[in-house]
Amino acid sequence: MQAFQSENSEFVAVYGRRRIGKTYLVRETLGYNFTFSHTGMAHTARMGQLQAWRSSLIDSGLADAILPKNWIEAFDELKRLVRQSTHKRKVLFIDEMPWLDTQHSGFVAALEYFYNGWCSARKDIVLIACGSATSWIINKVINGHGGLHNRVTHRIALEPFSLAECQLMAQSKGLDMTRQMIAQCYMIMGGVPYYWSLLQRGKSLAQNIDNLFFSATGELHNEFDNLFNSLFSSPKPYLNIIRILGTKGTGMTRAELIEHKSVNDNGHLQTMLRELEYCGFIRSYRTYGKKSRDKIFQLIDCFTIFYFKFLEDSEQYGEHYWSQSQNQPSINNWLGLAFERLCLLHVNQLKRALGVSGIICSVGAWRSAHDKPRAQVDLVIDRHDDVIDLCEMKYYAGEFEIDAKYERTLSERCLRFIEQTHTRKAVHIVFVTTYGLKANMHSDIVQNTITLDQLFHDSNG
View: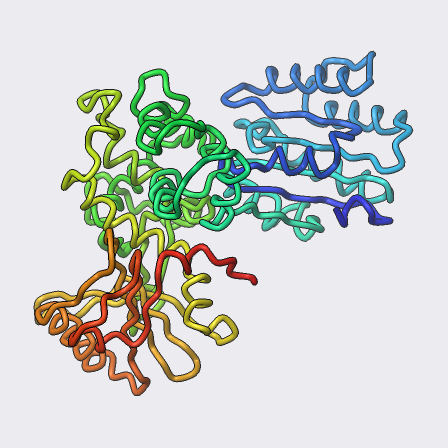
């Protein structure tokens, strides 16, 4: 790690959603060689946090550590530990730092004083702030307007695995999974490494899903509540927002959101939307031809959507629901929508398949005007080489066959897009489907076809 090899003190921020592998990355990279290591406690008041801090100081070698009365004293004790350390580089790892910032605790002010007044005057400190509450790390540490402004020297944002990375993980665990199985698993779990680590050899994908989610004793049966409680001190308004967004797959504008009586436009809505986007639960995108203030907010987290669809009332289904429901209409309909989200999460791979990775592109969607039956394109790639790709995404068990009716639908949608956007660019229809298109007299309307296999390609290679 560059920060460890530096000749100056460094402040590193590591953030990403729960179970994404932040702690594992830091510990494995540094070989567990910390001068001080501490993990904040969820939903614990200041004195409980300070007692745990003292315990960590003792575990790190400060046998006579006192119980600090406040965070200033807590960091003073940490200074004592550092002064007696023989480590050339003093690595101070504070995991789940957002949990330390309890109400009226004074933690952030004490952290500012500790780093600005002491660490920055030395050349041997590596302070690592880590947390699942991504919005806290970004707002209080990285973009903080107080004493920590511009103090972070390195930031590591851990993103979920891609399909290709999930395939490598499955192979490392000896799981016999086809790419279609991996894609279906991704539609449920997303690219969260910990979830994938729980898959068991010798069981089918359906059996694994039943064991993890639908069984009352399943490892991930209560994950949804734990996830949001770990990210937000008051998760209820955030859950309300994503629950409403989940009712409309294509997303909503801010104006559409506040039409719901349960959403208060009290000045905090924009902040909550931004924080949900930081944490990877939603995405915001521009509708082609609209201004940025009209952007759409869309629920995009695979696990959250799966929870709302199948797990929230899972008691009515039984612990073998997933195994018993394969190829049922409810599952097949869900797969179709989930595949669209899978594609939206792999836009870089789509661009690579189109050969436009090196071309500046903007990504959005499009909705037709209200004066006609509505039409929409969930993925529009506006390229700077004077081409616009309208992406049609279909999950299908074999080669997809376009018939005369569907050809007319695609043609009319393309014409309406050109008519309403007044674009002078060439407009191409791109078809993204599991196993490609079956060539026939109607398939020539599609300029490019992308298969599931191409979504597995490394977007950087």
